[in-house]
Image (cartoon, rainbow, N blue to C red):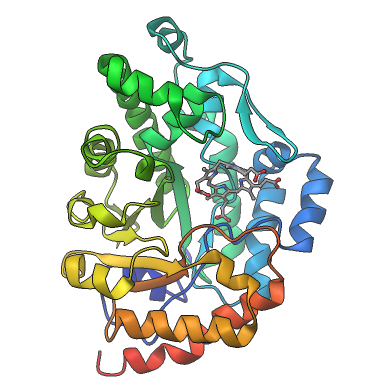
Length: 356
Ligand code: CP3
């Protein structure tokens, strides 16, 4: 294996000393980049792009050519697992992801296809291997999955949802069915993330985009418990290096102490939580990732720089912070504003690491 030239991201995740705060962005490969839109057009569709290892590798590399990010993230989607389980994923322009079939009954659950990551999502593993090879040790590669709860929301609702009416009815009225589905998904996620590590992923993120739609008790029962189960079963090392895990529950700011005990090395936070407050609550157990409001990237470079300064100041001195947005970058952002964001982290963060 090629030696890793920049391990700042992996070190910060383990709260080891670094020269400056590492930075990457959720959805860094995406529609705000004209070169992404061109490659997607060449592939035909978003799903064709995910299934073509060369082109998935190309779009993974695009943001790294523009910005000195400290990590690359696999280009794929969290909905590959429900697709492989036989639900039939498709995207309708402007409407987001949809499924031909849903899971709302015991019979639907029993009808799901059996799942083996290396066989059924071999195209993802091909992409991981191709990207690792192309990265040539420049920066680490992040693999990812959705959380069981977040995947289940799409599978039960049949797509995106505002009120989660169907899945919440299931959770409250048919908890056994809900838990059977979540248990099946947890097994699939363990298999999927383990396969990504074997293929070359060096860190893992679990996206729990919709955990924050649950009640406090519901979050622990239907989301956190399954992420904890997954993490306890993942490989902890590859090539002699620790594989750190990031758990990102959007709108999970109220439950940080519980999240900090799920076994993840890093807790991702959205912009509604003050990162300094989060650090005082859980910074002795875990590293933090986040948390600039993605909409700040619509503001001027000067305003963006001020926001980066204030987040760095709020986190304070020492390692254990991975700079990121509080959620994915949006398609309307001007790519030049991302330059201002990344440059600000690079220029303003070394002072917080001097005595490390
Ligand atoms: O971060 C990265 O650069 C890696 C790629 C990545 C994508 N999706 C690419 C993508 C990752 C990590 C995801 C995760 C994902 N997918 C999540 C969890 C993170 C989050 O944003 O909360 C969720 C909920 C999904 C499901 C999904 N896929 C949605 C809601 C959408 C957007 C639909 C829309 O039209 O806005 C997608 C499609 C998708 N996934 C795109 C990209 C770049 C846009 C597709 C396109 O090119 O049109």
